[in-house]
Length: 365
Image (cartoon, rainbow, N blue to C red; front, side, top):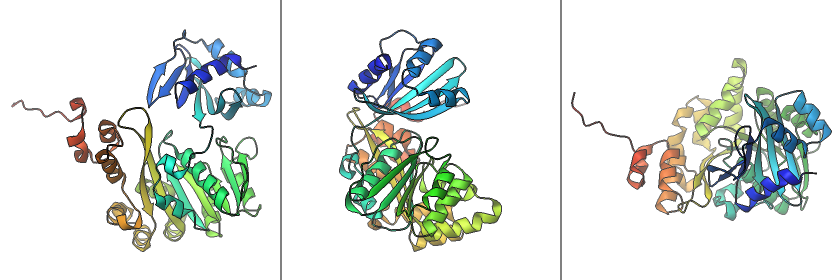
């Protein structure tokens, strides 16, 4: 029975929340348009949260959580839909975050993804990375990409996820979805197994450690198209993270791999729309070409932004450029864009809240 927790999740859905939070000492909270708002309810106790969560946990999940401090899983119910759940322990007791999964997978146009992203999927091998902070829509972008491949190509697609968010029904392609913890012990072991399962496409939910990154590179080198995510905010930081993750004796090999087999890096942020009612994905896009490959090989990654900036005709764009153009088209909130931007000077003339701007000290000592 899950009537009680379903009532909160249903309310969150009805209000358009992206997340529903349960924490000791506060009422349930919903994140709407990026802002947390409490539901009109009493403060929850540790016991209440434990009882609410046990309504939807399996015996295996309860045992796994009792052996550790975190638990990731998916929850689906005909009444409230599908959620990605993280359950955790903290100082005051139990807590949980429910991320709402859309009832269907959005397309490229709905997400506002540029046409070049679809073109990336015409490759048959290499590595495509979708990066960004937690909650910036990486999983949705990847689900959209897998959905397009599933509808337009005859491939064997294997996904490794933690947990599974969007469920894909095989269409033109065969889609095999495996969850870390339930079907494989880790991303690395899942990747190793996937290479023995005649894959064309492999999706890795997170390149979170050296072994997983190394296995993903091997898969991309050996004739597979690999899609993966990293928690990095730009193409340069993504490349640095990949190289830094490797032992010293493998760093040059990693640069060589990236120069030859990295197809593209898509870094995204979610920014409030100008009416404040939604959030829009804004992308930085780096496509590997001869100039960028040479900079990677010669360890001059810091020069890549200038190549991206001057390669708009190839479909590349820097995050600040994409943010600025979205502000000028009146698609996103200029104040939020200012806060998300790296070079904030470009955005100062658009800011509507003067308190965000740096204060000039006019006093003379």
